[in-house]
Image (cartoon, rainbow, N blue to C red):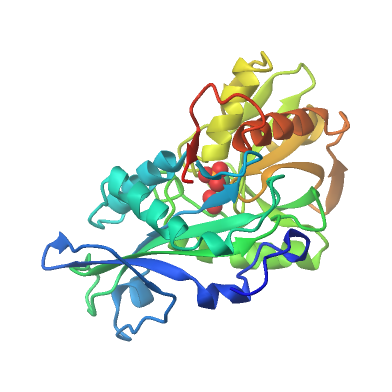
Length: 341
Ligand code: PLP
């Protein structure tokens, strides 16, 4: 690549330079995973009857490779993505990739694309890696496929909430996941239903939709691509329990940091929308892309409620602590950061 990537110009979107990157590719055929290979970024040819196109048998992951403040290219807890990918595969009857092979594939992809990692050491910009596994076998009946393609591509990206580090959420009546469905894995089908609520939220001036549980339509679940935390007025930090939501790696990291480093009581439990609106002093989102993003207002039933009664203080401290570890500015007591260079 000719020009170094300037972090200030990057948004969280597919960067045109992705055309010049390398991808990792590995096929499942004849009952086994073949050897993986690094190849130039390329289009795939798929049968119109490919299972993924008709029935959505596919899964994905999202993680970042970035420069730490020590000038090293690092990953953050990639083994967690590997394990989640494994669980997602099992849930969708896809032959799972052993976690250590997933991590090796991610590392190989990063090392083949070092030129595409933005030179920012403040955590705002990175190379976003997208491991995907799709069912490629053509078929007409609804059955698990016999052929799959596992691939990883990476794109330089900027911050997820580019212009608005503080976000506004609109509660939607659409439910993204049913209990005992696929809400707790990263299945491609989970995201299709979120397109319309997100578009509606944006049309009304919000950044994203906030989902409620499908049984009572009352307990918060998560935003489109981030988990939710609520600091209550009594200083207990609550977050929806696992079950139908995606077990976020940032969520897990924030729970650990809030307990260990800030001495907070953290509860994973049902959190009603009324509790969020009327009993909270701070609300924030967590995710690989969003990192820790404060929520200023929430729209619910034609009203807009301010949920910032704490000047975003906890979110700011947790953001500093998490990115401090991620960027190797602070000690990493949990061995979360994996150096590649
Ligand atoms: N919830 C959903 C639906 C997501 O897509 C994501 C992002 O992957 C998250 C939560 C946050 O998960 P993580 O912290 O692992 O990025």
